[in-house]
Image (tube, rainbow, N blue to C red; front, top):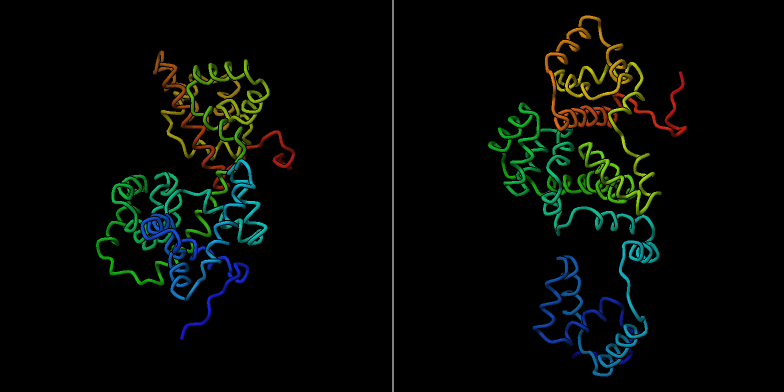
Length: 340
């Protein structure tokens, strides 16, 4: 025989109140709401609804009155990352709250593979090249074919072919292996991606301005100075230009020389100051320096756009070497000053 219906809303916990609320809305509206929830939320609510038993009409009335009071008393609402982060920190603790916020700030998608499918292919390829070929094969087999194709085309040819062969011969992957890969992706790759989304907006704009050609860069910085001089100065200070290569020490220049295409370097130096030119020439052998000068002379007049593209290539190579700790790009910050 069923127990007596509870008549006080205070005796119901949060999941029970949500279950009552859904059941009270009717089948059509309940289905619409359930479709917006994650599978684990639907499972929890379904289990709660199935074990609710009899609920009195007084409880349903109290629930809706309480809900209406709470909504009407809040006034206007403002949803933001900061608001949610504070709420999660207070309710779940800083560590759990931060994990959820990192997941929110990361790429969109319900499952890990949906999220991964929305990661830029260059970023994903950069991450995968440090993983075992079998792990690469599993990950690429789980994302959309067109996205996997773009990632494969970016990976080094030998590495990409190894992944293709493993994908061709791959047996069904055990569930615990997939779960282990998902956990690693969530705790390492996605967390890093989410945290890059929290960078200072001036840093983000400095990178965008770095990618402009020379005329566009000067035009946009000039326009920005007329409306917000402080922002323009901050962006200018954060930008890394071809002339900033003078901040590299001799060892850094020599490492850079070993990693760049010499034709592109010759084209980049055609538009460089004498200071930057000398920096490269003094870190090359006499024979190599002579050959580079001859290449520059043989080019004759060159288009400014081609010079800008070559300089961007050199800058990007320097940044990649710096991110891999192969060179050090000193800045004006004291922490980055070198001690010999």
